[in-house]
Amino acid sequence: MVRSDARENRARILAAARQAFATDDDISMNRIAQLAGVGPGTLYRNYPSREALILDIYQEEIGRLGGAVTGLLAGMSPVEALRSWTTALVEAMRQKHALGAALSPDAHRTIAERSYQPVIAAITELLDAGKRDGSIRADAEPVDFLQLTGALWRAAPDRTQPMLALILDGLGVRPAT
Picture 1 (tube, rainbow, N blue to C red):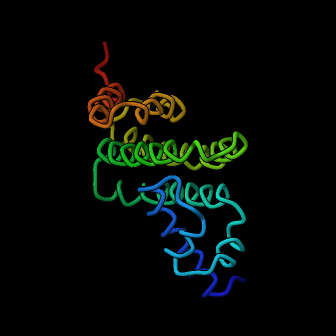
Picture 2 (cartoon, helix red, strand yellow):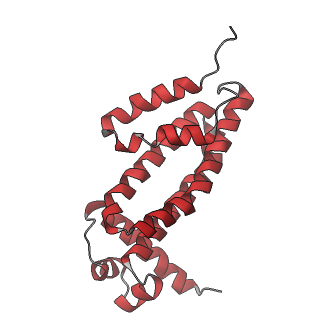
Picture 3 (cartoon, rainbow, N blue to C red):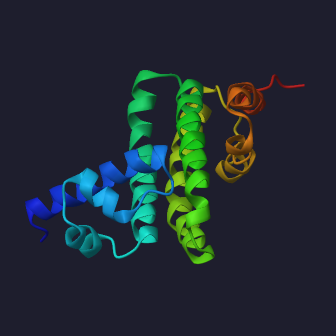
């Protein structure tokens, strides 16, 4: 069992690192420790490398995104929930890409392996809700949706919503011919 102060230190480190990396992807580990209000030993005990810290930030973000689906569906139509969730995913992918230069190929592979199933599960839940209410085509597949939306993080930020609208329009139920 992890002590409460150790959990708090870890949470402070993650919060400080997330905020620091958003403005400076080259920030030092020692500076992150200072921002978190912990000593370097505490930082390195929790995160022996920069990669380990970045991996945990990604993992936390994927968990947050997955956990948001139920709340989104409770307050929005399935299509609007999918739009909101996908927009957040695209932003997370842009942040990941900004830090990507700091990661080894093995770390990139680890991120992909750890995030794929939770992302597919979230997309499945969103698509299934739309299939149930008739707003999303019955043949829409989570893997296809992920592949299509994977290009959005590479697009200029002002093009994200128009491109996402095209993808979502393609998910719509079509009248029988």
